[in-house]
Length: 150
Image (cartoon, rainbow, N blue to C red):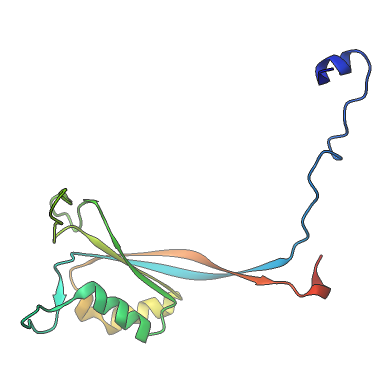
């Protein structure tokens, strides 16, 4: 008999608490701390160093290498598909040929003071780039020990 019909005839509805799935114990602890994210927008055609026979080193790779050397906890380069930067014209990747002027985003995550120091140390690499800072939380997940599970 459907539940609505059962209620109309006086039958008891199932207890909603007893229908719940069993609760998993909290086996993990989440730790939070404030960090920052720096986004640096540049072109893949931006290079650094002397031009050699095979070309100069891409700037985005140098930024990630120096971030690693400076102890930044996370650094990635992300390609974009369509957009503009620094008030330039709108660019897009073609179906056959990649646009060497379409923006790349280098994203660094670390403590605010550490990111600030990175910019002051490597200002020669960052000149005339759009740079954005955002405050985030870094979460670390750890397993609780057997005697601390609650």
